[in-house]
Structure formats: structure tokens, C-alpha cells
Image (cartoon, rainbow, N blue to C red; front, side, top):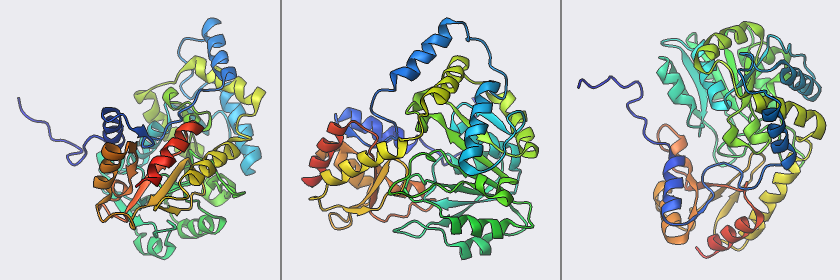
Length: 381
């Protein structure tokens, strides 16, 4: 048979699948893939059962059930001091990855340039390339992973269609500040540049720091598509539910794509999530919950030879192993899994040029005893 002309010839199986498979093969503690390793609140799962039983099992409206959209708009409005129209400016999606892909699909055309910051989450660039766009990578400044805004200004030109930001940042755990968003606002003012803001870890920030959303900045809000995830905020990554917020002129285009990819998302879970948010205020203590886990993991590796890179948000901790080994990070991550029984993610895979700073990412969204056991293993290296 004739071979197809691949749209993504360079793309292979993701590092997450590879490291998880390696962890399973060698019975290693899996701190690689970013999913919570503990049970979901029974109050939430009971609500899902409730709505299954009462018959909410058919298609939801294409943008999501209105009750949930109203609840989310009220929450975001109070949190970020903004107004969002639940009818026209929010859509429930099949997770954040679908929201990001559909947004890129809606706005990126052949030859458009998209500025993104490396290390960048691995779903960004392929979606840009599939639609004929050109990813323009600007490296975050290691080791604190901040943005060089002068470099951004130098890269912006007439072909720049989108700037993608991610805060709290996966994989580094860094945060964008008020000054960062003010810089972004200044750079995009008077242009037609669209912002895609990945804010899926909005509820996970540490040490009293605040998540800065583009929704709080009117000049950014009017040009931004903002992506969120129930998987991250409610510890239900397998449900693949999220939502996207944006001005109606962008959301109209988003929904044109959305209706022909997934059309609508899981009905009973949308009803359950809506009631759960209204009755349990689940986001209030998420940061403290994960901050305690971060601190437990850090305490467990205090005597190790790894150097800690501060984690200000997300549920990922970066560790620098440069004083332990000269191996490249992919090889070292494999060695840790096979010989020491603990799996992580090498950070070089998030760079287009595979920049290797001898840093690994560990997920601490796990049970406490597993984190303590993992820390003891790391202390033996």
C-alpha cells in the first residue's frame, strides 16, 4: 500500500507513555506521569451515580450544560474580577488538551507563527504544526524558568498570530507574576495577536503566592482563550473534562471546531461537577493540600545529593542531578527506573533542541507513604 504523507513525521510515542511502561516493567514507583495517586472524594463520585440513576445520560448541549457554565462563570468572575457570558464565552471540553488543540485549530493558519516557551508541554507544538503553523520557541531562563520579555519583543513580527503561555507551569512549577502579564499586555497592545493561556493548575500555588490569570487583565482578556481542567482541580484526570473561556468572537470559531470533534462532553459528570462545586467549595484548600505533599516529598529527600529547584505551583518537583552524574537526562531517568526503582520525566524532551540541564521532574500527587518511600530511594543514589 502507498504510505501516507505524515503530518507529524518527527513525533513518536510520548515520554509519559514510555516512562510509565518502563516503570511497570521494572515494578518501579511511578512519579513520572502527572496523575493523582489517591481516591476521589466520595461526595463527587456519589453525585455521578445520582445523575446516572436519574437519567442524565444523553447528549449534553454542545457548549456544555448551562447550569455548569453559569456556576463556572460566577466563580471565575469573583476570583478574577471579570465578567464572562455563560451563553457565549465558555465551552465545556473533553479535557484541556482538546481545548488547546481546538483553539489552535480555530485560529492558526498556514504560515502563522506561534510563540511558545520551552520547556513546553508536549501537546502544543504538534497541534501548531498539524495546522501549518510555525512554532517559535523562546527558552525560559534556567534555573528559575522566567520569561525573557526582551527576547519576546524581538520575535514578534507581522506573522505572529499567537503567544502561548502556561502558568502555573508544567513541567517546571514556575509562576507568571503581575509584571509578566503587564509585559505581555504591553507587547500585544495594538496588535492582532491572540493569547492562549493554559491555566490548568490555577488552584495549585504555594507559599502564599497567587495565580495571575489573563482574565484579570481586561486588555489581555479580550484577546485570550483560557484553558482549564477539572482533572487537575478535582483529581479526576481520567474523566477528561475541562473548559475553555474566551471572548465571543474567538469562542464562535472555537465552537465551529468543537462541534465536529467531540460535539459535547459527558453529561452526568457535568451535572455532578456542577452540584459538587456549589455544595462543597472544592477549590478552597487545593493549594494547601498539595503544598503539604510537596513539603513531605522535599523533607524525604533532604539528605539526598539532588539539588531542589523551587516549585511554586503545579504538583511537580524538579530535581537537579548534575552533582550526581554526567549522563544525559533521558539515560539517567531510565537508570533511576531500572536500577533504583523510581520513575521520573527528563526535562530535555520538552525542548525542541533537547536542551539538557540535568533536571528531572517528579510528580508528588501521590499517597504520603509512597512519597516517603520514593524519597528514601532517592537518598540512596
